[in-house]
Length: 257
Image 1 (cartoon, rainbow, N blue to C red):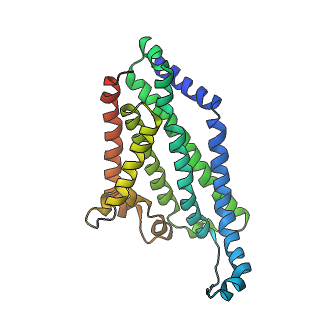
Image 2 (tube, rainbow, N blue to C red):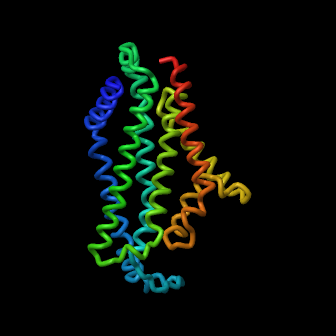
Image 3 (cartoon, rainbow, N blue to C red):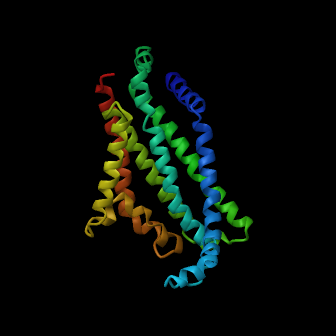
């Protein structure tokens, strides 16, 4: 247990030195502010440009903004946060392989599965902290400009499912980090699986079972769909996530460092 805590502290210290502790809060705060700002400003800009657009033959209808608009913007923008997260943490293991620091740590008796656990936990902390920080900032910004957040009736369900999808992505990052030694391999593996699942989502008979089915935030926010309607996708995602983490252990144990 001491070895695990020591390695986990090392991971956190390296994240602080590598500016991750600064980059992610700033990124998710900015995204949170932008969600409300864009929801408020875009209709105003369209109204200002309406005469020019109509002159070019485009008909522009009146647009209204409210908290629901801001939350729609949130789920469109949070993918930027997840993409940034993937790029930053794809190098979590690769950096250790390159510097060969893991060899020294493992020769001191630290079990390999503890290395996996510590790195996965670090990723989970950063993703969870950043995601819910963005939710909180958006929620507060909506209140500050007088919008009622309760209009987004399924906000909590939509947010939890999107966060859970991020946990699934973390399991892929850990899995491919035990397969490849370069961060490029980790990135490609993660993106190929993600894109592959998006393609499978287009097949009607299996679309309800694909992790991407949890990301139907528009219906969730408005109450048209509830989390229970995504139960098949939730179960499959949980199985894939646990499976990816479980498979990472024997792969990492056999990996030549």
